[in-house]
Length: 364
Image 1 (cartoon, one colour):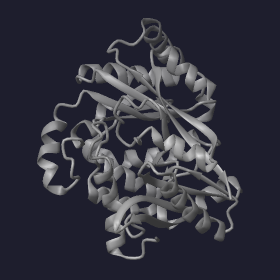
Image 2 (tube, rainbow, N blue to C red):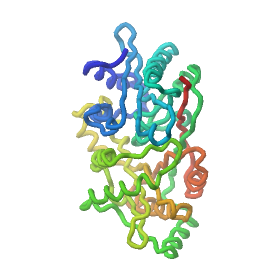
Image 3 (spheres, rainbow, N blue to C red):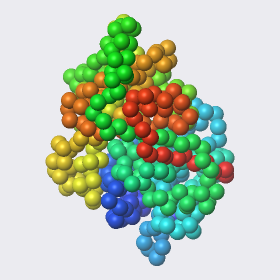
């Protein structure tokens, strides 16, 4: 049934907290953050998008949920007739999952879409992909997690793989020596300098990111540009957990040519607040002091500087600074499975693939 009021939205938000109660790897996000993500009044994504939420009920008990999403920014960028689904959760019953997929598909078809793609929650710039490999390890910040049976629910419904996204891990505190040497040589030869984020000039730093982001990631599969409002919103959300030395700007001739962002894996602390409610924040803050994991969320350079070793230079910065700060494990990604240059670079830097997330397509 479609969500049409506040009570329906409450049910939509609440379902995962019950659904995952027995899963020790699931990480409960703060409910207020989930509500912000879903709210057209609070999330600037909805300045160019529209969504309809659905819940499945059995004898008054919620047994699943899904969102159907119309993303005008994607349509403008790619000129296709692809709509999206996201926030999918379901009990292990094919009729329930099928009813949810049917509801989302009908809504999208009525909007003129020919393909339903996902999961995107709500877009490629947020949590996306269905976990299909790596179920034995917990998710990092802003990465999804789901039971293994979700794969069969998708396959039986007739979804087909559109693209796989790879997450890489490194448990070593030392970067490969040859990479360290190469990074120093590149910096000297090309006159590249690196610097950390300046928190005293945070808004100006965000403006630099705005100027670079949509150039550095242009033309990747599925890429949708972030608007200025979306970048401002993301920066405001992440500012409380940013560690300046884990954010790196690369400069050449006084101009910023690339940046990399790694964040402490706040999921380590969030999992100690299973209800996701505000009264658990003191406990989250306590455990946040003991985080030794980080996620390299973004890394990119302007087109003319790609394939020149500057990515290795920025990785080297984050790796060495992170080790000094006590971070002993890192995740890099996600990376598109067929982005050969980035996949090879991750291997050379000492990372190994450890999780796979799948984007699915279903013809409407």
